Image 1 (cartoon, rainbow, N blue to C red):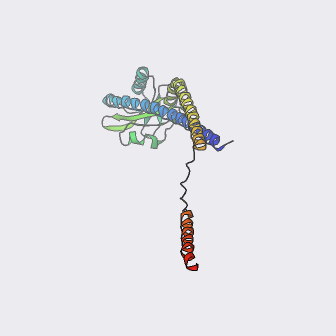
Image 2 (cartoon, rainbow, N blue to C red; image 1 turned 180 degrees about the vertical axis):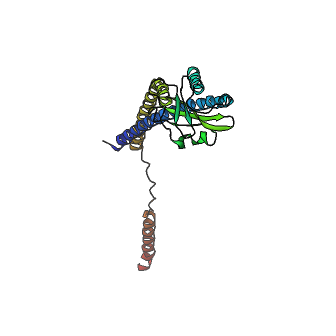
Image 3 (cartoon, rainbow, N blue to C red; image 1 turned 30 degrees about the vertical axis):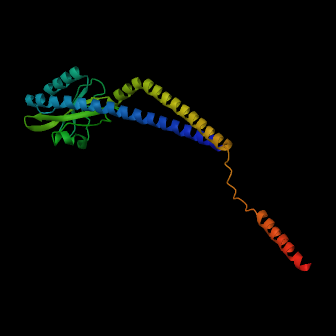
Length: 237
């Protein structure tokens, strides 16, 4: 294989690899955007629930009021609702199956909510590998007695959103690959034309320095010699 062919093939392969890599990176970034958008929306919803919960003046524990609050939130948002004590013990779970009542969520995950009164998010392995939790402080008056936790398969939702976009991303990738191949072929043709022109181009002749003529000087010497002989001839007579 000639150097030109190797160069063209390398250009095409590297361009296709770059297009594929960009496709994977784009997929990851879009999926991350979907996930973060869902988390931000749930955080906003959780923040709006803090004030109404505080107005109930109910301690976060296993009681009828807490269960009604969890059921009401679940009915209006479709999100699984957990209510925990300040140490992370789950006392209410809106899910009828696979209840987490009695389980303990790590205190460091809930610390921003139970200690600082912030709304935060984290992965909740207790509920499932795709489950993301949004926790908000459960206030009893001005005191934080626990956490209100909204749980949902946000990672699965993000993947589903990407599944709908995958056909368009695939088409874009194929189009980029086709453009790359065409560019490589045009690049190869340009190289071929350049090489052909350099091979067939006329070579300009270098100027040759003129050679000095010595004939006139020789003729002049010969004439002088003849004249000299003629001048000597009368004396001899």
